Length: 68
Image 1 (spheres, helix red, strand yellow):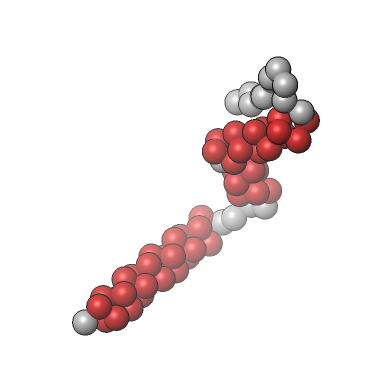
Image 2 (cartoon, helix red, strand yellow):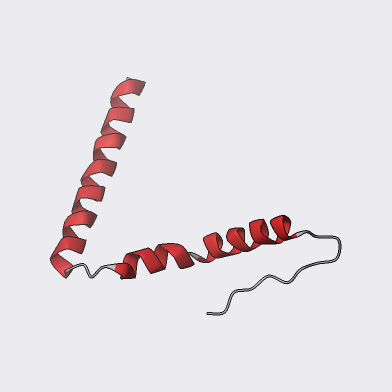
């Protein structure tokens, strides 16, 4: 997965770097790197997913109650 940004005509380094960071963010490279930085046991991954699911349900319920 090679990502790069070539310097375009009339573009300075700050603009190039900003464009590069945007590309890297869109590709999800840093998120993937951080995810693989530390090993997570499968049980920990399942726990995190379950917590996220419950948080989402709680938010939806709170939103529905506010609308009533």
